[in-house]
Image (cartoon, rainbow, N blue to C red; front, side, top):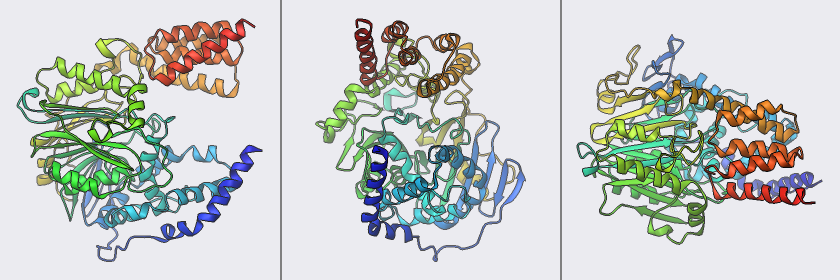
Length: 556
């Protein structure tokens, strides 16, 4: 009965607001001033394609290298043509479960209207050149998910998905960690930046990461780590030695989309050459979630964070220090009294990871790219405590889409190969790529093999194998809890044995036994969970609540 009332309310709201939605549905960018030629793609191998002004090739580390040049519409067309199969895979990874969750055609229509209503103002806040790129990419989209939105609108909407995901607490999208060192903190005094992008949307989503090199007709040439269909930037560096990465802050669930963070950071990367220019661009745009934009600059030889939110703006710069650390809470004076930020800092795992980065940086008197990689790969807690694999208090949570290290002055960047940050950190020199790469290479790889940092041997250990087993068992146990399914005691024991220092393993066993009314067994599991490093205050409270409820039941 309640669900029916919700649907009636949603439909009623959509009817009332339909007039405000129509302009956004009809809006398409005017690309008449751009080159209209449709690129002809040539297939070289199953993992290598070229067009007149670009090419895509898979390197030996499993990363896709993309090089594209041209005006905005051509960049979109070239990118869409070259990556069309990858985009279809990304859509399946991102939207594949929508059909399962929303099988009803009626509910799919409601979903479509709800998305249109939510994104009704986004088109007003995205520069025309980026809408033109998205339109170009959309020419190569399939029709499998047309019920979500038409091709162009669907890809446009994807650019707000990152922001929405950061705002929702129940998605594991908010654990990014970043740091920078320069001056007497690095081997040669030059700026070095490291970051983990812990955006998790399923294993399949992270399988085909793209290292993209773009040469636009306007602005600076730049690289970014991305995925098919994504024209925004989450991690990137331009040919001026300016770097951009993003770390989510604590947000309320937004009710209307404006400028996606990845579009703002794309604009900064393409048009800023130093810190002041980056700040000026950030001030122009209205965002709809809270985010720390981590800016590194070769020209300034330092880093700052620009802290943006719908109703506030701050810049954080360190004083009397040659290092900057950023996790997922704000640090500028503008947010000193922000209640959401203070609560998030006190109750989440952000401050813990911040302290861990401080600890690891203090152990390294002179940071090098290799040391930066080692920090990003670190799986332990404070004071090297074993806190279980996959714990969000760790810098390496074994779920990252990518890890990345920049050395801006030299134009160097290292990007992690799968799995997580454990594969090689593959090196690229932007100066070489943009000066030597032809427009349609048939064989040339863009990476620099001589500078690549070797893979982490942890991925060949028994502990890693056990962790991968844990992830499979975890899904099995959660499904059993949600669907009242029976599990053998051996399965529950394997879950705990595969990740013995992780609090969640015992918590899930406790939940399973609690739901089946095996209260003594549940109590024992929750008690063990309390002895481990629990991720957040909310998680700790949940464990305590179960123990309290079980005590009541056992004393009845």
